Amino acid sequence: MKCPRCNSDNPDNTRFCGQCAFPLPLSEKIPYSQTETLRTPIEELSIGSTFAGRYQIIEEIGKGGMGRIYKALDKELEEKVALKLIKPEISADEKTIQRFRNELKLARRISHMNVCRMFDLNKEGETHYITMEYVPGEDLKSSLRRIGPLSLGKALIIARQVCEGLAEAHRLGVVHRDLKPQNIMIDREGNARIMDFGIARSLEAKGITEDGLIIGTPEYMSPEQVEGKKADQRSDIYSIGVILYEMVTGHIPFEGKTPLSIASKHLTAIPIEPKIINAQIPEDLSRVIMKCLEKEKEKRYQKVEELLSEFRKIEKNIPTTEKIIPAKKPMT
Image 1 (tube, rainbow, N blue to C red):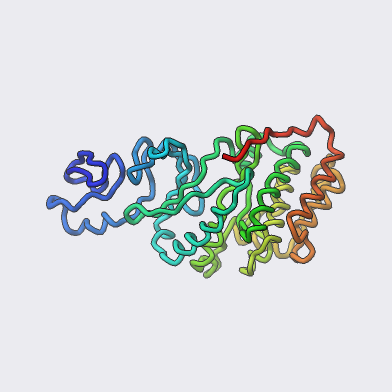
Image 2 (cartoon, rainbow, N blue to C red; image 1 turned 30 degrees about the vertical axis):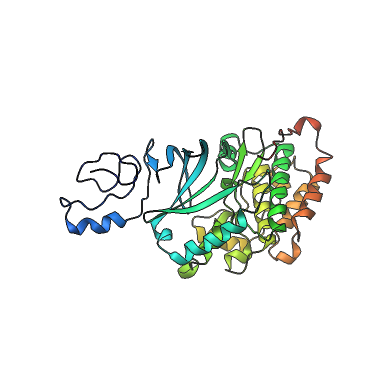
């Protein structure tokens, strides 16, 4: 059987093209009961295959709440991209997909060197997928697991770069809602790049917060998000506080056996001051982190720019040897 998309030959009993994964027309040799299978969303792509007639899959680079993420070659543009295959249970909800499409329009407006660019949301058969800028490097969570706490200088540089990217997003009215080390890539030049703008809010529309389920990552969620209240830029500032806490101490503020137990601590527990865990942390930095982690958002920094100002003051007192300044790359 020839694939109608890429014209490759396939066995008669094949449901999807082995070259591009396109659903094949129903063969007389395939029982009628299998027609539903042809409309089943794809959950996984094989290395070396071509998806949607355009993207050659190079390797799987991660798994997230939305689905699997692949490094792929866009054969039309001869450029590497990140391709995120959306899980069937999410892909099947048209309201969620439409909400994400609207959010993506806003996220695509963010043009900043510390933000990973979002490209498009498309559909292949019954499978929705997202394409975005491919950033070679390592996500911050993997880096922390590998080397442990960062030097004060390096932690401040990463935090400042994330805040600079956030400031531009907030200026455009875009709130991330799911900031965490897994969503921060450190590229080969040492620059921090925020990923996945718009995804968390799109999922909220599906009502996943019902029946005790939680949107986002409990370890990094603000108290208002735990309660299902509206998240704004101060929610992102809370998450920055958690990330910075982890970068300088090697620990997240709250741990627990279940996501719900962790989330509840964001509502009621007071974190141990970073300086108590790591005596090398300056008093002013410990104070800044604790202010970011205030339960009431009115008591936190109200804008990312305020946090940036604090970081710049603290950096002046950091020894030059700790200041590993990454090379700046021009926007392309």
